[in-house]
Image (cartoon, rainbow, N blue to C red):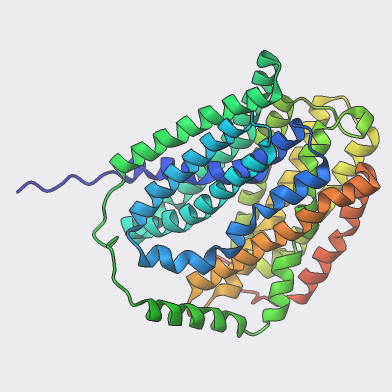
Length: 423
């Protein structure tokens, strides 16, 4: 009997994590830009799109059922099919009379499908590869997730901008963009249906629902009984508070006309600034942060990272006050802010790993990421309303002042000096 040839991980890891990144970027970033171009106010945009974080906040509650029902491979392919359908739904409903309500419904479907896909894809990665391969390919999966970010925030937004000029219709231009994205995603779904291996460990386990519920409850209880849980939750919810405010408003500020207090960028220019220059700065900051933490540990680098994630926010005060016409200056400011954010965010990720240590580490880390998503969702819901009441310049000044919140919660945490240092 012939043994079945094993599919190379190179055939599916890059495309799987590219597929994981695209819907997240579409829901979190592209939707904001699209609604701005459709003429919605900043308060509405920030409120509606911040609610889309909710599936990532609550995904630990249904993650056990991804283990209980069918296989990880089935979930991956099924969720990609749903994401493709949701992308097509956005494209179709953009030209309907109630476009905002219909597109939001499609974005909700996309968000829940994407959050479920994250659970299944990460679980499948661990089942399909041995420990050595998992370590070897971890950089590859991260790289292609970043490629998806560039493709979403950069290429897709720039494409929509070109189509806006060519078609002279904002809804039609964005509809075409989403149709093309849906076709790409459905192609990825078909490809993975054919290519993804079927590891023996990815079986349809029959587990008593009561047992799952009991284990699930024990995991949650043990998390909230960890020493220092109160301080940890404050840190996870508030460390990124200023950034959560900025994330929703910055693209709206860049698209806003000069007369409205913004920079007056075109859709294509915004795609270049945020999707290429910004992502490169963010990635380099994260790499430098990781290297620094590996040498000196989290405790040594905590305060440089706190100031790094805080002080560069001042570039938006400069941009708002002077409203520069130099595209180079705008790109340089965004690069500085995103590099600082990437470097400073390393402390946040390492602290979640540190706090998750011990029994049920994987499940506890998943709960930490839920609080991370909540920390982005709640401030973002208020950001648009606040900006409309105080204006862009005063909003950015207030955000810089709110960096004191980041400083305070960082001061409260306690970390083992040896944590993070390469042994």
